[in-house]
Length: 246
Image 1 (cartoon, rainbow, N blue to C red):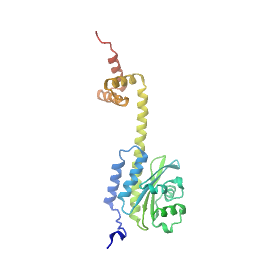
Image 2: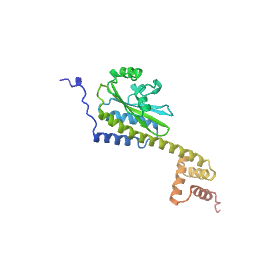
Image 3: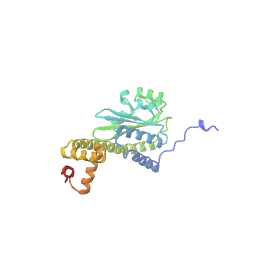
Image 4: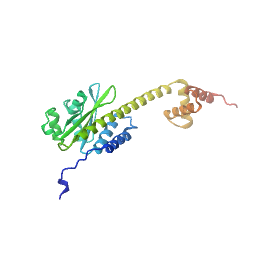
């Protein structure tokens, strides 16, 4: 028997497999700060982990406008990109705030232009689940099958759990990015602050290190001594400015 000609055997995800998927997603996104990088990790992990899903994509919107797109396979990226047309399963999921299932695109009439493109690319079934990220960004995760009727109620349950978990992880990614940006702005202000800037210059000269590293040295000293950063800077500047005895 030629095994290559047989239809693929699809095993639906059980509780343990779904838990493993969510755990792998958490591990992959927990330290990321770049939103686009996080989306790409999300769709690739999902594609590889969910039985019966050949491709995965994500559609993101900010203030109702396209804000990002990711695809596990670049060839299908246009299916998730609303700039190619808003009439799609992803947009239906976002607008209706509910999961959208099309188990067999052969008879699908809801998104005629999108469906024709999808079928040309080999897509035969799709699930789109809405993802709430934060007050500014929402989206949908899209699971694609290469054969009709492969997507089951178990896939819908998995998509629902995945959407909930992904929303939390992506919100955390955006929060980390905001905190990093704020910290960077605060650092820039400190480096231009009189006595702190002088102290940073002293440390840079002594250690031959860049400004950010010198500022970290000051912060570490302030934490160790349990005194304000500015006071540490003032002490350092006074010390190096003190005239030495002949």
